[in-house]
Length: 193
Image (cartoon, rainbow, N blue to C red; front, side, top):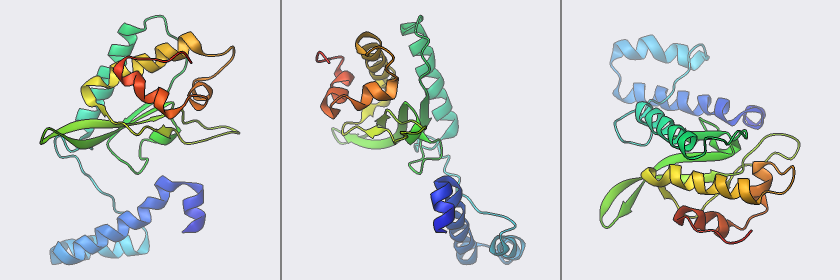
């Protein structure tokens, strides 16, 4: 397991997910389902997974795709001349299924409470990247309301465009900022960087 985990965390999860699927089948499955699926899962011929796609649960794939498309359309409209390569991941899976930790901008759908009501939020990670100095994105302490995410990303990208150093990549720009500077972008504010 250690070798698999060090090679690929997402792939390593199949072992745990398969064990969970087997346990669920043994407890709740009919005899027919147990006979059909459990032996092939135990041998490793088949694997188990989880499918959490209930509407509005954070892993609703259709809703996440819609939100991702809305963010891209907004950014293309707000920043029509911006051509830098910035990778954005929008997911509801905290287990790095969409590899949000190694994207320039990673948005993870989560639930939160505001004035006693449940709301949709994004946990924001900025500056993840691969390469010789690879690192996970920096996790912000403040979550962003889903409907404000595109505006937040626009503020960060505008700051990058205006204040980056010559030859500076997005992840390098993010790495040199203080976390508090990254949080204030959500309010459309910016300190001189």
